[in-house]
Length: 116
Length: 109
Image 1 (cartoon, one colour):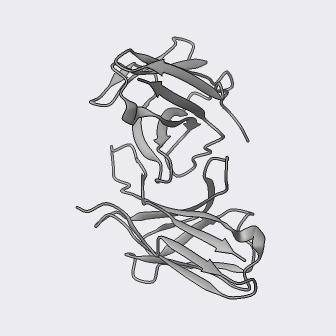
Image 2 (cartoon, rainbow over the protein chains, first blue to last red; image 1 turned 90 degrees about the horizontal axis):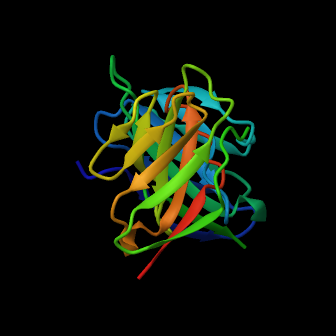
């Protein structure tokens, strides 16, 4: 078990470009979460999946953002027409929801996005 | 959205116990207290959680008051590697975590 991995770790892009981030959860974890973190603030929830189903989206997730988890394993987060305000750390977490087990989220190292 | 109140910063001498307080006076009966920490430039790391009883694991102890309106995270022997932002979160489940701004703990040599 190598933990949650995210790729890339850093991304610099120009305003208006599209970017896509990937998250590989801990194997067999059925829940996957995306968060955004700006400087000096705690992580803010964006969305989460249970298996391949996207169960909840935050109002922070504008229509320029889309997340997928097509086979219930890895997930991608795409930002279209990036804006400077999208500059942040994007964090992925995974957890295993099971009967009688209190869920715990395990986080990846994050992808730091800078929009110029 | 904030359901917890934490001091913005604390210092602790290396080797001493670090006691991080958290107030959660509006906690509901089905809400757990979770603690995470975030070392600079890394993703948050789960530390411990509890509902009513005090909890201990290899990283820390969690002391929850009888009325559940506050709790304290205890790092028994703080090291320089414990310097981080510590988040106290109350939630009915881990699918609904609101992190807030946490407490920045600095362990001093």
